[in-house]
Image (tube, rainbow, N blue to C red; front, side, top):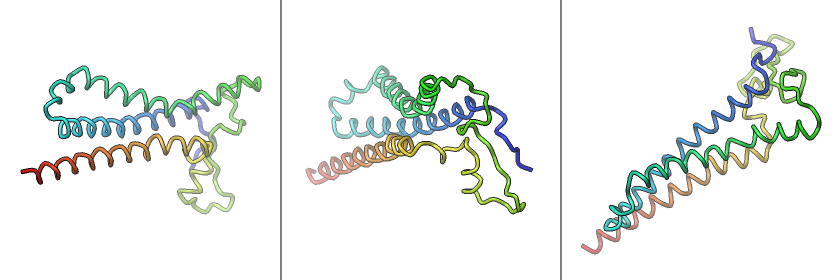
Length: 165
């Protein structure tokens, strides 16, 4: 039996989704930091000892977490601002359109995963399209391009070094 209403409220739904985005994005940006470190080690081997330090490592990790937080922040901040502008301060009102509800089909058939997720407002699938594009670009496309570029630079440097020998 499916629960008819998301029992934890809008605030917890928003927090759960934001933390999910934050943790996943931080993981991906830490991979970017590792790729950057390897790129510097290969392309700048003589300067790498000067560049690489505990301080630089901490800076890269902090930057990964800060950028990730900036990507997960809009769904937490924008609804609050919009509620304040409209004069609606209630966070526990389950009848609001952004509260999460799970609807069972009337004919007792089973729901597909897509139908289930679209019936539950507490799903990343129900975010604003602009945020989905922003999040996808910041969480996946940009880091992917950075990792590909850095690893191509490593490959190119290694290939050039091999030809010089």
